[in-house]
Length: 215
Image (cartoon, rainbow, N blue to C red; front, side, top):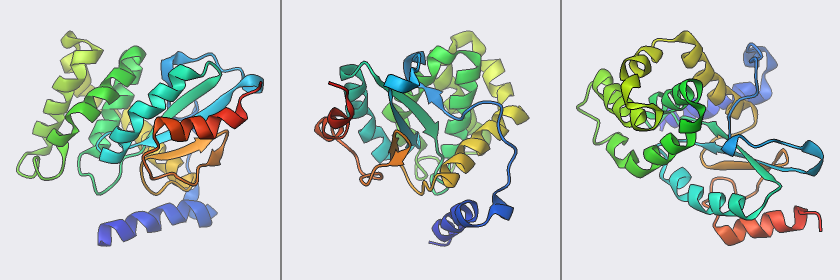
């Protein structure tokens, strides 16, 4: 409970206290664009999803969202990694998503799929007696199946890269600045969905997006 209260306090600092919210503006917009889409703002519907790769609700929300994206040609997605502080290994998982995106951008979403598939292995309980380095090594071995099997030394070294650490922190701080307090959390064309925090099914997404599509 104390950790959760601290999390809400931290986020509230970004929302309500500008003096505490000051961070350096990043060189590029946070997040990973799905399928490297060519965004045409005047005709596009933008979905933003804040996912924790070790969150069961994020995992369950992903397949119906992908199904909806496949249905519409004018809907674009950016996923923002948002490591929940009560998932002990979430920050390392989000670091790996940033590492994958930097080393081989096409591997970012396949790695997210792998984290969702094997996330049970990285819950707090199963990793309770593991060292941090053992957990990172295990995650890195999972990651290189998508980044490239010969990239393990580079992946492990990237955990010491301050730019990767900063990018992962910015992802979290950016979510806080948008009022995100849990995952999954969704925005459509910049507006938060009332059902954020819930696992939306394919029909839910059709009901949200269909009225926005130009006929």
